[in-house]
Length: 603
Image (cartoon, rainbow, N blue to C red; front, side, top):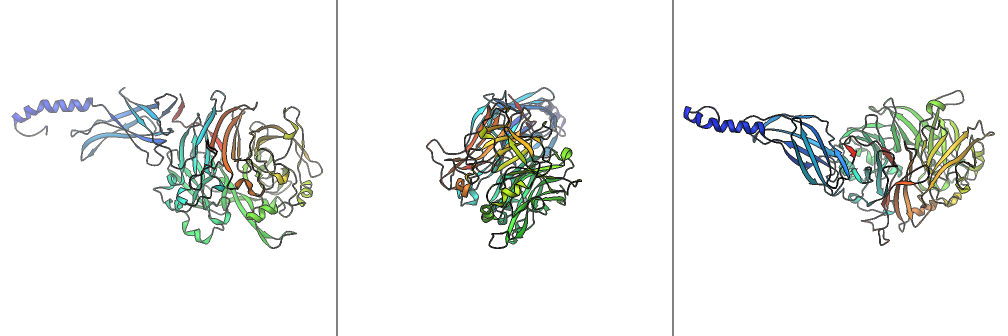
C-alpha cells in the first residue's frame, strides 16, 4: 500500500503512510477481561492487554505492573502472572498485533474491581469489571468475626461437603469443594470435582460421585495437594477408590495418584490414566510431603480374625502409614497399627459391626521423629493419641508402640485392663492453666493431632470431638492442648500429663474437626460437624435426617478470644434445613492457615 505505483501516487500516499506509521508508534494498549480457562469466573479472570491490529508491523510493549482492588477498596490484588512480561507482534489475518494475557486470581464473587496496567514506558490504562457468582452448589458461608490486628497472617484453607444425612440422590448435584478464605473470611479460591477434572483425561471421575473431602496440604514447591474419592471411598472403604491430585494456583493438574490395593473389580476401568498407582487401601484423611520429596500418608490395612465373643471370622480394617515415591508410587516404608495395638483387646464392637473399622486414624505428626523417634497418630475409634517408633531403635522395631494418651473404655470390657498394661499417662490437674476440673479428661475420640511448635515435643494439640455418651463424654466438643511433663518408662511407671489449654465452642461436633497451632500462638479450629439440635456420636444420632449440621471455623487466642469466625451451612433464619435437593446441612473436614498467595495483599 505504501510502496510501488506511479511517482504521483507515491507522493500522494506518502503523507498518509507517514501518519499511519506515527499512529502505530503512539498507539495505546487496550484492556479486556476474559474467563479463566480453569477456575470459576467468580474468583479468577484473564486480563488481556493488547494494541490495535495494523497492517504495517506491530510494536512490542512490556507490561511492568498490574494492580487492582475492589471499587470499595477493601482489598487489593496484583497479578499472578510473573512480571515484567513482553508482548511481541504476531501476524494474523487481521494484521499485526501485540497481546499478552495476565492471570488474576483471588477475586470475590459478585464484586466490582478496577485494575490498572502500567507499561515499561510509563503508560497506564485501567479497566473496571464485575465478577460473576461463585460455584453453583456452594453453601452459605457467614463471616461473624474478623480482627486482622490479632489474627495470624494467611488465608484459611478448608473443604465443604454435604453432611451424611443429606441423602442426596442425584450425583450431578452432589457438591464438594476445596475452598480458600482470604484474610477477611471471604471465598477467594475454590475448586469442585467438575472444575478440577473438566477438560482433562480424568473427566470421567465426575460421573462417579466424585468428592473432595480429605487431606489438603501445601507441597514443597508451593502447589496444593488434594484428596479425591469416588463413591465416598474415604470412609466407605469397599465402595470405590481414592487418590491424590497436585494442582497449582491456576488450577492446572500437575500430578495424579490413585491407591489401588483391593479396589472393587467393577471400578478398575475407572482408574485414572495417566496416574501413579500406590499399593495401599484407600489413601485417606492426611497425606504430607517429606523434605526428601516422598509422600507419607494414611491408608487402610486388613486382617481376618475372630476374637472371643465374635460370631465369625471378620475382616477388620485397621490403618497403616505409608511412605511412597512422589514419581513412581513405590512404597518405601509401612507402619501398621496391627503391629502396635492388640485388636481383640480394643476393637469397639459397634464400629466393627458398622463397617469393619478398628482404629480410624485421621491424622499424624512427625515433629518428634528426630528427637524421640516418635510418629504420633490420632485413632478416632480408640479415643487414643498413639506414638509408634518411626525407625528401629534399641527398644523395638519401627511401628511398635511407644505410648498412648487416653484411657481404657468399656467396649470391649477388656480394653480397661489392656490399657493398664501399656506405657500411658496419668492425667493430673494443671493449676497454672486456669481451667475448671471438668476439662481434666481424655478424649473419647479426636482429630488432627499435632505437636505444638517450640514446646520441645511436650505439648499436643487436638480437636476433641467428645459428644460420646456411651463413653461418659456426652459433652460439647473442644480444642485441647495436653502437656506431657514426664514420659512413661513402662506399664508400671506411667508418665504424667495434664490439660494445659482448652476452648469450648458450646456445641457438639461428634465427628470431623481440625486444630492448627499458629505462628502468633493462637489456634485455628474447625468444628466440622456441629449438630442442631445437639446430638452425640452414639448410634450415629448426629446423622439422623432431622439433624442439621454446620461447620464453624474459628481462630482463638491463648486468652480464649475469638478473632476469626466463619460458619458454613446450618439452618436458615426460619429454622429450616432445606431438603434432599437443597440441603443446608454441611460439613468441613478441617481448616488450615496457609501463607498469603503472592498475588494477594492487604488493603
